[in-house]
Image 1: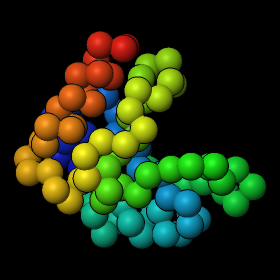
Image 2: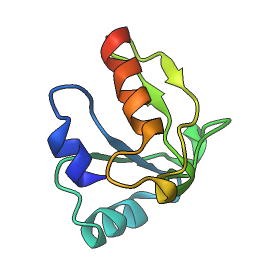
Image 3: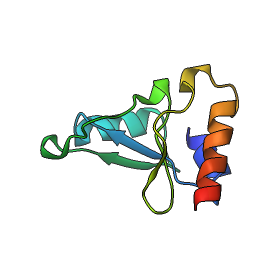
Length: 96
């Protein structure tokens, strides 16, 4: 994901949101060497009502913070930049 974040930096921002606290978010970013993604965590009192596990796909938002796609194709099934990601990035670019 970090490679995509660097490659498509002019078109979108990749956000990694951890729902298990700051420490796990920092460990995850360190182990995956995330340098170009925005790494955030959600506190227990702000837990989302729905979400998407990253390896199962991405949630895509636009520049107005609206959800463009609730779930792309599964990340683990993508090779290079899979069709689901391409269409999602295009949707963000169009919506922006």
